[in-house]
Structures are given as C-alpha cells and as structure tokens.
Image (spheres, rainbow, N blue to C red):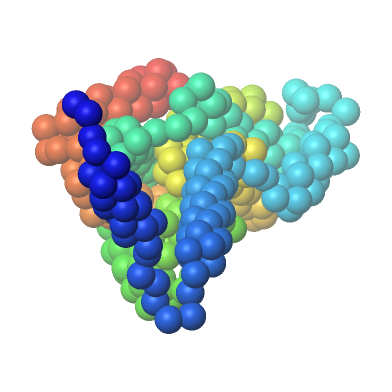
Amino acid sequence: MVLTRRQAAAAEQENGVKAEKHATIVEPEGKTPHAEGDSQTHHARGRSASFSSKEADIQHDVKKTDGQPLNSKYSYVFLLLIIIISYVTLPDTLQPKGKPTILHVWYYGWISAISTGLGVVPLVFFPNLDAFWIGISNAVAAGMMIAASYSLFVEGCTFNAIEDESVLSSPIRTAIGTLLGLLFILSTKNFLERHEELKVGSLDGADARKVLLIFFVMTLHSFSEGVGIGVSFGGENGHELGVFISASLAVHNVPEGLAVAVVLLPRKVAKLTAALWCILTSIPQPLMAVPAYLFVDTFIPILPVGLGFAGGAMAWVALFELLQEAIEDTNMMTTAIVSSISLSFMVLLQGAIDGR
C-alpha cells in the first residue's frame, strides 16, 4: 500500500504516542523504577538468605536426631573404674580351695554384675527403632521381667535352709515382701510423677521417669541376688556351690541386661552408656554378697522377704508400665504374642540354668 506524506506523518506521530505511553510508569511518591528494582532485589536476597538459614538449621537438627548418641565423659570414667576394679580385686586363683575368701565372694558377685552389660550386644545390630519396634522391645522386656518375677516368687515360697530359724513360713515372708515391693514402687512412681522437670543424662520428662523406674526395680532385684551369692558361699560345700550359683546368675543377668537395654537404646541412649546402666543395676550383687557371706545366720531369715520385694516391684512395672506402652505402640494381639514368647524363653532358660 502506498501512503501519502500526510498519512505517513500521522502514522509516525501515532506510533510515538503509543511508545511514550508504554514507556511511562506511574510510581508511588518518592520511588523510582531503579529504586524499586534495588528494593525487590534486596528483599529477594533477604528471603533467600533466611530460607538458607532455616534449611541449614533443619539439616543440623536432622543430623543431631539421626546421628549416633554420644557418650558422656562420665561413661568413660566409669568404664575405666570397672577395668581397674576388675584387675585389682582379681584373686590369685578363681576357684576357691577350701573355705572361700572374702575376695572370692566379692569377685564372683562382681563378675555376675558385669555380665549384665552384655545384654546390650544384641541391640548393637539394630540401633534405630521406630515406634512399632519400640513397642516390640517393651513387650520383650515385659515378658522377661514377668518371668523373673515368677522365678523370684517360686524361689521365695520354696526357700528352705537348715539355718533358717524364722517363726514365719517362707510363703508368708515372700507375701510380706511382695506387698512391701508394691508399696515401694507405687510411692516411687508417685514421687517421680510429681517431679516433671526430672532429667537423667540426655533424657527428661516421661522418658527419664520411665528409665529411673526400671532402674530402681532391677537394682532392687539385684539386692536379693547378691544375698543369694553370699549365702551360697557360706555352706559346707560353699567353694563349689557358690561358684555354680554365681555362674548361673551371670548367665541369667544377660537377658536381664537386655530387658534394661531395650528400654534405654530406643530413647537415644548411647550403647556404652546403656551397658554401664545395665551393669549399675547389678552392682548390689557384690556389695550384698560379702556381708551375706560374713553374716549368713542374719541374712537367711530375711531372704524370702527380699525375693518377694523384688518380685512384686518387677511384676508391677512389667504389667502396668511396659505392657501398656507396648499395646499403645503396636496392638493387643502383637503385644500378647511377643511378651508370651519372651516369657516362655526366659522360663526355659532359667529352668536350664537351675537344672530343672
């Protein structure tokens, strides 16, 4: 199409007006297009830096959560102390010749206590557990503790020693001990619940209370076992019977350590620290073995009371703490099956150890 000069000039003028309108931007007072661009860039950089900072914090928290729990310096000090005591108190001969010495009684109780730490070993291969497997662990621990309680009740009710001159029968003394154990554990639980700020190492709140409750129960159980070691060394054939009883308890302590470990490790307690906690629950064994050996006539009458005391406290924690948590994390059927298998295994193991 051919345009006249007037038409071409008019078209050029119209295009210039459009271009001017397109290039014109109405800005708020005090701002220019260049200033706005700088402001937008600044805000974008700020948002990017903030996001990067939050992302770094999240990654740091994930690493802290998913990483392996660290042992405290006290764990290494306690481990060194165990090694030193094991070396310094080692008798010249492990097998007593004739009448056992106090050192023999102590050392066999000490070895029995240390063996409890081996309960952590099976869980070394399965360190990270989700809620379902924590429930399974609680069911296993509950089954083991119920079996141990049953063993304590049977041992207390059938206790019979020539040196026992008590006017009360063994079953009555065991029942008295059971009631005392229940009262003790209920009062302990009430005390712990009233101290919500309680902290044990890296644990606090409900986890700390749970761990302390298990610790108290297993430690109480060890008092009666320590008395049993000392009394077994005190008879006429104590140099043989004491060694056999101590070795049996050492084997028996491994699954008891496992029952403690399955409560500790899922709560992010380090493996070495968990092993030391297990050992600490059995420290009363050597501590009670020596006085029980020296004063057999004094300790024999109260032994059924101690057995019932430990059995009652242990049964309460297993039934009303561990089993309930296991049901919450899994379900009723799974908890019943797992705890029954654990209980049966523990009873068979105890029967094999005792030769029944």
